[in-house]
View (cartoon, rainbow, N blue to C red):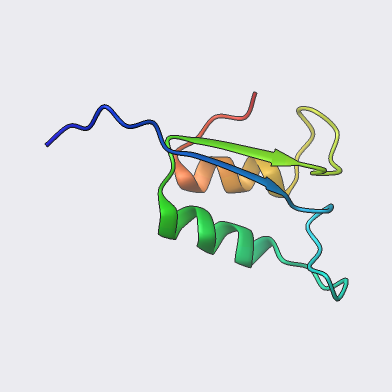
Length: 67
């Protein structure tokens, strides 16, 4: 059944690092997959717009488009 709810995930990912400084691309992908938001907003991605990288790969895997 369609819903009128809009689900948004906004997260400061600190350049793909967890609080210990370890890479957390997989954790970001897992949370997005588990929560299935309509819109994903990631702050402090630390990648150049349009450049190949984790953001583009993550968007493609999840069926999202980077903007």
